Image 1 (cartoon, rainbow, N blue to C red):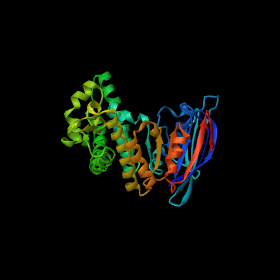
Image 2: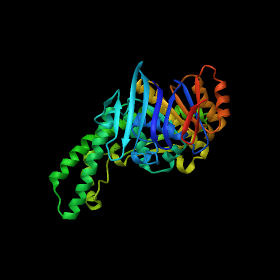
Image 3: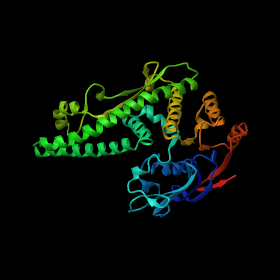
Image 4: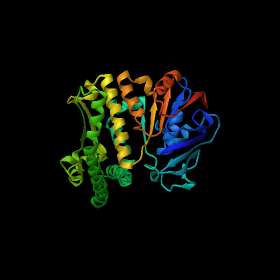
Length: 369
């Protein structure tokens, strides 16, 4: 799978842009703040229908009195050409079209064009709260399991409804057990399905991750991912029954899969507290490379791989490990940003079998060299 061409208008700092892409490696070079990462974000939009930097869609409309942006990509997928168009207009619903057919639900698009991104802000997975790690796990599984994504969306919808109802119970000083049980039954159904799939996924993914970490760190440390959930010891039904009084007092659902946690450890200790900067970088790079490999196995295609400012951040050993994988064709189409053209050219001159295109990005313009 590869993107053959990319076009956008009024997206972030670009009035317009149109480029023909290489099926292997595409390098975007420019000063900090020139808009290199915005090009990667356009590619990310085509896969996930949203920005990897988060924020409302309309925040990504160019600040020059424009009232819309669009991104178009021409894909080669399974030897078929497909066009993807994402359009956002102020005051209107976001449009996502594949071959000019609009998706009724945005979730229908997730997983069609698998993608993994490695970026400096990935360190938030270690240093931020549990929600950040659940988002990573959920977004990962959703790319290869449509039922999981549907169950997750349903669970979150019912959870929001139940929490609103708990607040109403408190305001009205009365409780409708029948209504609460209706919400409970739905949370039990969706929550149990999500738990079982998370558990199965983690059992399969952890060995892949540990293998990558051993390669990148030269096997000097022991790392682990631990999936922590109350459902290891109690069913969703039991959790809701046992915490009903607490839920009514707190006016929110205090237990469930929305409280699950991914714990990162190094030599049996919390990575956040005991891992050096280098060890934390190795952990994140290994996590993302394992994500790529696992997605490749599950989808039977090589996902797109986006590397944002990675050459600047990695030490020589980690960089050489990554470059070796590129040289051996482990990846599909790559998108790389860097501030130094010469550095990238020197890297890829050592890989004569790897096709590369270079683009210069400068304050809202993008041109192939």
